[in-house]
Image (cartoon, rainbow, N blue to C red):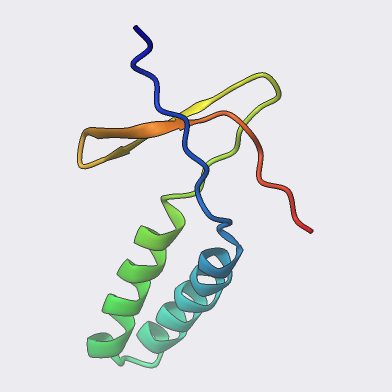
Amino acid sequence: MNQEKITKPTSGYIMLLLAIVLIPTGVILLSQKLLILGIPLLILGVATSSGFFFINPNGSVVLTLFGAYKGTVKARLLLG
């Protein structure tokens, strides 16, 4: 019996753009001594960027959410 569940997540380009905006904005706000805005933006940007992964040829990645198995990603996402 095969327990593997193949899943295809959505592309992460929007979240990548969000992380690219949030991290420098948080750093700039921290340098301006606006801690109330800078710290949450920086934390959110770092947390957003930690979810990216790359699939090597003939490889796979296991997706988990809080330790629970959600599926296996085997194929790369193609743009088009």
